[in-house]
Each structure stands twice: as C-alpha cells, then as structure tokens.
Amino acid sequence: MLPANRLPALATLALGLMVAAVALVAYVAPVDANQGLSQKIFYFHVPVALTAYALFGWGAWRGLRHLWKREQGADLESYVAIHLGVIFGAMTLLTGSIWAKISWGRWWAWSSDQLVLFLVLFLFYSAYFMLRFSIEPGPQRANLSAVYAVFGVALIPVSFLAIRISKDIIHPVVFKSTGPDMSGTMFLAFCVSWAAMLALAATLYHVELAGKRLDARLKELREALTS
Amino acid sequence: MTAAEKYVAGAYLVVFVVVLAYVLIIATKLARLEREVAELTELARERRVQEPERKAVALG
Image (cartoon, rainbow over all chains, first blue to last red; front, top):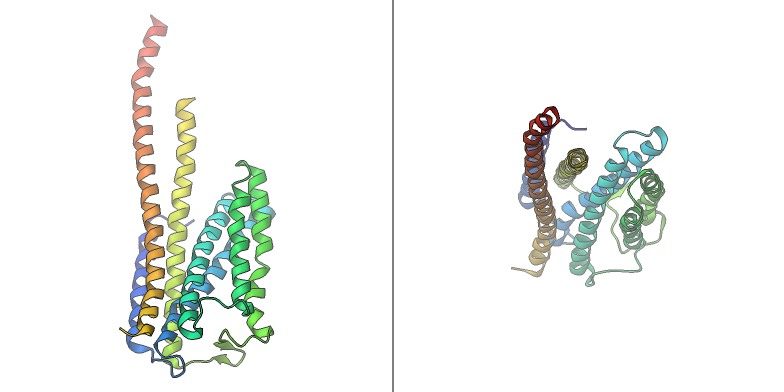
C-alpha cells in the first residue's frame, strides 16, 4: 500500500512526464517518412496498450497472491488493476481505430490477428465484471474472480506475439528481435510516453484503491454505529 | 488543418477525455464518501449525547 503522502508525488510525476511526452512528440520526434504526421498517434497508442497489458498482468499477479498466500486486500487490488486495464484497453482500441482510419482507410481490420486478439483480451477482461458482480460479496466471489484473472493473463503473450508469429502484414511491427525500428529521438519520445502512461496508471490505481478501502471502512463503521 | 492533424488531435483527445471522465467519476465518489463521513460523524455525536441520558435513566 502506498503511503498517503506519496500519492501527490506520484501524481506530480505523472503530470510532469505527460507534459514532457507531449512536448517531445510535438517538437522533438521527427515526422515519419512513410506514414507522415499520423505516425505520432503511435507515441500514445502503443504505451497505452502496453500499460493495459501491465495492468492485466498486475491484476493476475494479485489474484494469484490471493489464491496462493491469502494476502489481505489482494482481491481488491486485482479488481482495481483489471478495472483500469479495461479502461486502458478501451483507449487502445479507440486510438488504434483512429490510426487505422488515417493509415488504412478503415476503422477496423478483422484480418489483423493482433487487433482481433487484443479485442478478445479486452472482452475477456470486460466479462470479469459480469462474473464478479453476479456473485454475492465474500470469499467465493474473491476466489472465482482471482481464478478468472489468472487465466486471462495467458492471453497477453498470445496477443503480444500474434503479429510476430503470424503472416499479418497490416499491423506494423516496431520492436523486432534486432531492436526498435525507429530513430533515437523517436525512441526517447516513446520511452517518456510509456513512463508517463505507467505513472498515470499507478496514480489512478492508488486513488481508486484508496477510495475503495475508505468505502469498505465506512460500511464497517456504519454497521458498528447502527447495531 | 489537414486530415492527419485532425486524426492525431482526435486520438490524443480520446486519451484526455477518458482520463478526465475517470477523474470526474472519482470526484463524484469522493463527494459521496464525504457525505457519508459527515452522516456517520453526526450519528456518532448523537450516540454520545444519548449515552449519558441512558445511564442516568438506568441509575435513577
């Protein structure tokens, strides 16, 4: 759990990195020779997607810790991480669609394995909430949610590696086995954007978690006062 | 404004709007929690006032 006084520092870091990322993308990173200005969507689209993977992964890890060690609060942490992962997943799909429209002339390509697999991952974790809220609060809900979260993580490497193992040529591959396929300033802008997204996700995660914990404590307090 | 500029601005706006909507939802929730805290504080205060009265009745 993050100490309360560290949260403003984390939020400030996220804001600073976000401003730096926008400045780098707008003024430092060069315009791509092949795609032109529309390639600038890459600096937010890919970091948002990678952050969504990280959040789903963290949600699965906390779910595993709940099942394995019965860690206090791990179920709530898993839920909050997956909730944010779905929000970042939605942002990935929306920014990706906009990029697809300008690059390929259409909003979506069912023939692209990576797009479809990311949609599958997104829908899988969206269904997590249907499962969670169909069960009464208690140990059974926590256990089933954790199992679901852990199983979903198997889709992450499949989604990430799909483009590399398939014959798909629609979706571009930037990170190859030989390294990133971009110039130094482009890579710097990408790294700062990714750090900004991770810091933003961490801030939102801790804010939501603090709210949920406060909510639970207030419920306990109400029960104690009204009994 | 060129078409590419419009799409790039649109993509960045999506991220901004989603984060803003999330912050608004959290702010609404925070306002609800504040109301609940105020309500529970009032409840605790009432109980504290009633407690000596109950004790006095029991002793009398």
